[in-house]
Image 1 (cartoon, rainbow, N blue to C red):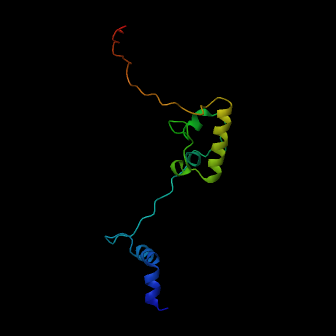
Image 2 (spheres, one colour):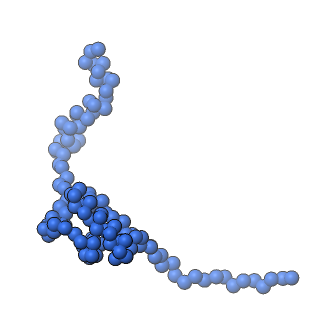
Image 3 (tube, rainbow, N blue to C red):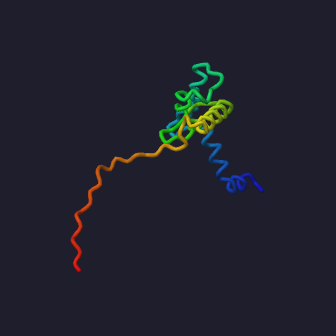
Length: 118
């Protein structure tokens, strides 16, 4: 097979090579996104206790789910430590398993019923 045939058979690889070399279409090089720094790292916290509810709530969403490490900036070891502490706090009833969403729809009003005809 010639070189031309190989290029025709694998257009995705060719496009990836071109994209990596050129960067953006306007000529500027691509910038790498900096990794977020964890709150645990900045405050130099080595371990998190399940009784420290205020700290644990920073790693929960408003619905009570554990935030992913790409949002919090935790390392894998920190994420495992946080997850264990949150799950233990949930078992001890210090944190809720699920936070119910409250919808303020206003007062319920029913239309008055028509009297039945017999």
